[in-house]
Length: 347
Image (cartoon, rainbow, N blue to C red):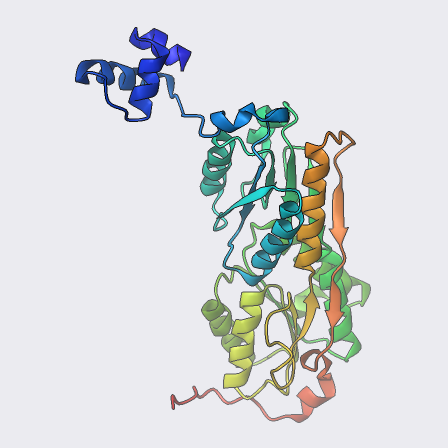
C-alpha cells in the first residue's frame, strides 16, 4: 500500500479510502490511485486485520478438492472439518473441477486471504509454482494425489495395490477375458490404478494383448456407451474392472440393459451409496476418505505447529469388499447365451 501511495503521490490513508470505496477522495485522485494499483498489480490483504492476533495466524485453512459435490471428496471435507473445528480453525473449501488453471487461481486466492495452510488435491502437471510460498515454510499437505515439482506431505490411497487386488480376485474366479475401463489418463490416481492392474496380469501370466483397455471415460454416459459396445462385440469380456465410480455406474447400466448383470463379473474402484442394495451387490475396492481427511488434517496441524521433519507420503490402505458382482465365475459366463442389444423401454 505504501508503494501504491508513493507512485500515486498521495498518503496511505487516501489509498485505503480508494481501495475500500470510502468517501472523501476526489475523482482525479481516485483515478491516480487506481492507475498505480493496476501498474503495481496490488492486491488487498483481506486478512490484514486478523494478523494482529498472536502468532499472526488467521485460524483458517484452505481446502482444494476436485469437487466438493463428489461423495468421496465430501467425506474428506467433513473429516477435515471435524478435526480442525476442535482446534477453532475454519475450513475454506473450493472445487478445482480438475482444471489446472483453476488450481493456480484458487491457490493464489487463498494465499491472498492469508490462510494458515493449504490442503490440496493437485491437478497441474507440476506444483513447482508453489516453491516461493513453500520456501517460507508455508504449511501444505496434498490429498489423494502426490505433488510433482515440490516436496511436501501427501495422504493417498493405495491405488496400485488396490487395483492389483481387484485383478487378482477376478482372475481367481477363472476369468482371463478381462476388460479395464478407466477415466482420465492425465490423472495420477488413474495411472496408478492402471499400473497395478497390468502388473497383476503379468504376475498371473495373462498377456495384456488379450485384455480390452478403454480409457478417457469422463462421464457415466460415456462409460455406459463404451461398455455396451464392448459387451456386444465378437469377443466380449467375461469380467470388467472399472477404475472410477462414475465409470462403474456407467458399466452397471450397460450390464443391466443387456441383461448381463448376473453373467459378467464386475469390480469397481471406489465405494458408493446403495452399492450393497443392488442385486447382485457391487464388489468394490473401497477407499477410506474419512481416514484420508483425518490424517491430512492432523498433518497440516503438525506443520502449522512447527513440525519440520522431512516430508513423506502417507498411504491409507483400501479394502476389497465382496458383494456378489465380482464373484460371478467365468463358468457362468460361458454357459449363458449372448447378450441382447435392445434398449429398455421407458415406462
